[in-house]
Amino acid sequence: MSQAPVTAQSALESTLGAGALLSAIGGFLDAYTYIGHGMVFANAQSGNVLFAALAVANAQWSVAVRHIPPIIALFVGTFFVRAVQLAGPRLKFRAVSICLAVESLVLLVNAALPVNMNDYLTTVSISFAAALQWSAFANVEGWAYTSIAATGNFRKLADALFTLIIGAAPATGTSSRARAFAAICTGFAIGAVIGALATRAMGNAAAMLPAVCLLGMLVMFDVAARFPS
Image (cartoon, rainbow, N blue to C red; front, side, top):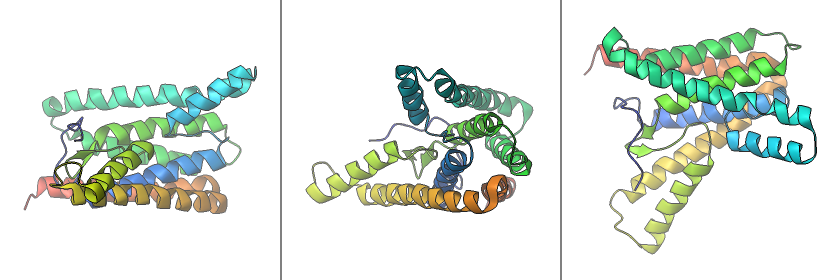
């Protein structure tokens, strides 16, 4: 059984459609930074840890250092989300809205950067933005997931499929869980493909595509919160 979500989300924010779109954005951003900005992952910090460790083993110190800032940025982004979540109820704002707005702003700024801008600025800022998304959106249809990486979601999909096929455990809700994680994993892969193609065709300006999607989600979520049905 998946663990309880880290943050409380509204029904709309935890729908499968929202989760799949956020996962597609996560895949897009990893492809965007890897292809366009020095083969550094913005989201998959396990990849950055591995590349840094291999560089250290080969005494490639400059290469190792290149993979450290995105990891630090993830911590900063997570701290930011937790601070916003704590302050939100007192200051009367929605933490999810703040996170979506800041992530969108970061992507729009990156889209406007010249091609010759240092890659560190892009990878570090997008790692920060990805941490906002990861921390603010922790569950889909009641199951914990991550929208910026695929490994954990693939494991949960495999577990649900095993339960359905073998019947090793009570299957209540298992088909829905399998459907949800299949959509999440597929969304991530599709987003990565789109991100790779868009980055090659548009360069930095490709970051506008996920930014527009995030702004659309921000408007939709805020309208739903202000005018509940």
